[in-house]
Length: 564
Image 1 (cartoon, rainbow, N blue to C red):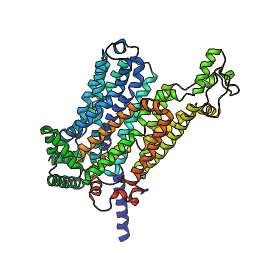
Image 2: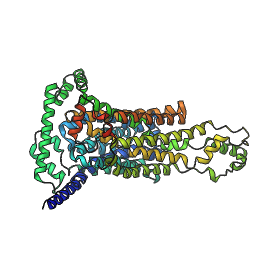
Image 3: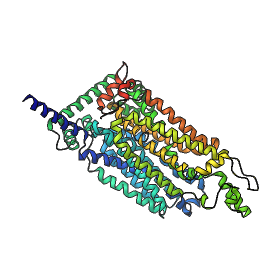
């Protein structure tokens, strides 16, 4: 009889483990809806690539006396990141007072309006206004989507489902680059893009509001109803009641902490209306609390490294990078061949070159290949995030990125310092030139693909997951806005600085710097970042409030690898 009871107990434990490791339909669907806003961001980032060529033939955009062609291209590319700053700032009040689900609904309005303005643009100002509105929505979405996911799904599946937003971002960029391979006029392409936020608008009306937010607003009944929808019909009412009670206790504790420190969210918001200086002072006071400044520092640092590593400037300038990677010596030989009526093989003087060997992969096709690798890499990361943990994935990602960027930098170094041809074009390439000639057909695209894949497994999605996990609920909305602001700020800085860096230190120097930053990021991951795998938001918050040896230096926890 005792043995039979033990067997039943084991079966119950197995059943509970399976239940904990699986997610309900509503958890999956709500995550997909939130992640769909990231797909819209991906389309926004990739839009410039297929649209610029079509814009150059449009007299309403480029044949204008008020702004130069160079400035039109520059502002078309950089205005969304600039507008995202404002979006990240206003996302905090929206998330706090309107709710997580309603914020996702509201961000579709500037997206739809922005794409419509671009689609019907009759001048450059309508185009830029449309880009600004879409960038504004992107800034709101960056914080809102991840926060909604973190509050609505269970800790056991938060890592798996938390990857969906970044995966949808990659899918959006893939769709945008794929559009560059077909003949679509830029206005028509913008109208096609507008259909995606319309779909998001409809879907956002079909998902429940975040239960933790409802509890913070005092609506316990609706929070219980929504939590039941998220957990599914197989979860017992007692379990739902226990989870609601735990959330209420956490909210009450946070309220007491806010009253004790006289730093409630309402007082911060009111201060913004009364005095900007007082708001800054209050926010600085709030940041002095260890449980606030430490996770804020970690999240902002991760966002900084995420951008400075260079994945986004690779996406924005992919066509230019592939063009610069073409062998300089072959470009010179082709010019000399045109001037002297000699073939590349004759000019090569024994290097076995011909016209066919000079063929370079179409840059639009190369862009699609890199974007496809980025998207597929997320499927590799899905089974790893909750098994290996956040820290291990980031360390693996940083190492592979540093390796691929270093090799790519060496390739550019060989290409830059290969011995020039003589004026008559009959002198063959030196050893550096031969290295470039032998590898240019596959090495640049391979390095970029490995780099983007490594980024997509680790430093692409994981910082967003960590951002949604480590912030205390008392300031989560505002800290998500802060880190999203940092993300968009560094994105803008990287996009603006890349042309200047390549001009001043060369492409090889630029990629060497990015490789060094990848290695530097591991110091933060190894020595500062806590492991959040399988922990509840309350447990993570409690770890940052300890005055003794903190969780972030616990090696046993940081490097735990095994079953989730």
